[in-house]
Length: 119
Image 1 (cartoon, one colour):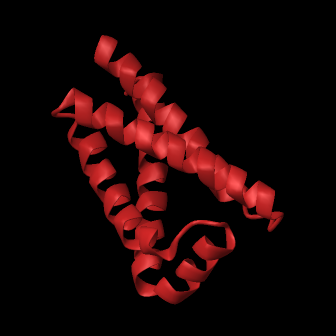
Image 2: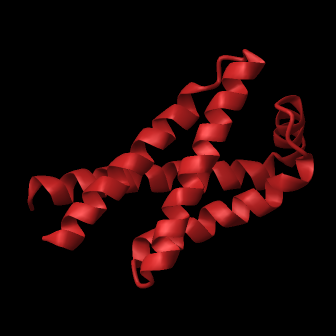
């Protein structure tokens, strides 16, 4: 296994763990997550659609069948984590590290996935 494959699989695997864990929390701990969203200035009705979008994004990334959907999933994750990171920084709650880690994983997964597609 080459270095690029290893980095891609680790980054995408860890991203997958985060993306499955987040929606699970959104669904099973909805009241707390809704309160957090509202505290950050986002409407609570976004909780369920965001959970679904995060799971669908994983399908697009792992299957890699439709290039446009894969790229849209990466872009959606990228913007979601930038917004989450900035919202937590603005709120001053100190919870900006998980979205920052997720943003790093998204970038790593995308860059090394593209390297594998080229080679």
